[in-house]
Amino acid sequence: MNSDAKKVAVLGGGSFGTSIANILADNGHQVRLWMRNQDTVHDIATIHENTRYLPGKKLNPSIIPTTCLETAVVSADLLFVAIPSKAFQSVVRDAAQWLNEDQILVSTTKGIGEDGFKLMSQILEENTPCKYIGVLSGPNLAKEVAERTLTGSVIASEHEEVRLAVQQTLSCGYFRVYANSDRFGVELGGALKNIYAIASGMAAALGMGENTKSMLITRSLAEMSRFAARLGGNPMTFLGLAGVGDLFVTCTSPLSRNYQVGYALAQGRQLEDILATLGGTAEGVNTIRLVKKQSEELEVYMPLVHGLYDILFEGKELKDVIKKLMLGEQNSDVEFVLPGPDKLANLKRG
Ligand SMILES: NC(=O)C1=CN([C@@H]2O[C@H](COP(=O)(O)OP(=O)(O)OC[C@H]3O[C@@H](n4cnc5c(N)ncnc54)[C@H](O)[C@@H]3O)[C@@H](O)[C@H]2O)C=CC1
Ligand SMILES: O=C(CO)COP(=O)(O)O
Image (cartoon, rainbow, N blue to C red):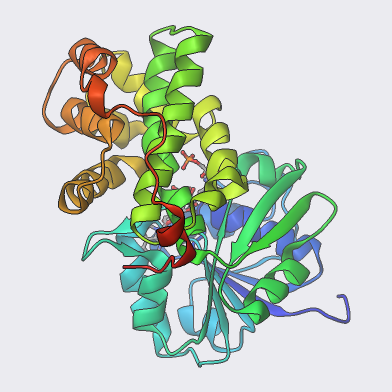
């Protein structure tokens, strides 16, 4: 073990939690990977060769799988939370009884909480005694990370201690970690791009041209930056790995579960059936619902989100939504609608 080895806990033994645990173990840290009891039959038995989430990947054998949350949490210097957003708060609340204010807590979850449009890092702030909170996000397809593909990611926190600790612990020859103090911008980038990956999956299934795909990704970036800026994120963050970087990878890779959902929808399959057979988490479906509501309340122009909502939840035909998007609302369709320099100078989460 290296002399700077840290005790690290990863909560969530799905594909991303496992791939983050693998980097940490490769870097010589003592890693406990916590998973709930239901998962153990498959995962603990197979973790050192194949997990059911990352079949065929050669994982580091020093990862210590555990189903005891107390054991994972209590003595960890640093914790990564990789639980899907729908279960995030309940796991964090359970863990909180063993946490103290000096432990560093980092969310890797790319979703939004139902209750009051909460970001995962806000859930960490509100439900734990920890002072040092951060978000890890970027173009990080779990399967490629587990294969040790050269990858870049972003640790975002207003605390320098968090940024440095995560850079020092996770960086290695195949995983480069950049730092950003815009926690909300980075976190929103990770959550919002899932929406547009669904749209891109649809475009791919329909055999759309390269012009179309380019228009879709670029307008998605404009729409997500506009929304994030309204919530206090810095639009410049969206030009980085956690913005356009993650948007690009999930809108172009069939490995993305959100892209897969869009692809299957455009082939005419029913949403419930797709989610039941996906074999992984697609955060974008719920994020569309939450962002659509929030965009109405905040009066942010988000035609792609509204079009997707109509297809997924209102039974509208894809071709009618595409027609409306191409022909509608010409007057409001200016290329960039971002806050002016006065507002940008004072960015704060509203
Ligand atoms: N898979 C990927 O490429 C990446 C995923 N993420 C994000 O990481 C989060 C987790 O995604 P994945 O690991 O891919 O999901 P996954 O679908 O591979 O696995 C989810 C894991 O969460 C566990 N889980 C579900 N409910 C739970 C509960 N109540 N208590 C404890 N564990 C519970 C499941 O048993 C499973 O082990 C998502 O927000 C996703 O957006 C972020 C970066 C990349
Ligand atoms: O966030 C991801 C890559 O950065 C993974 O995307 P999916 O959740 O769509 O698989």
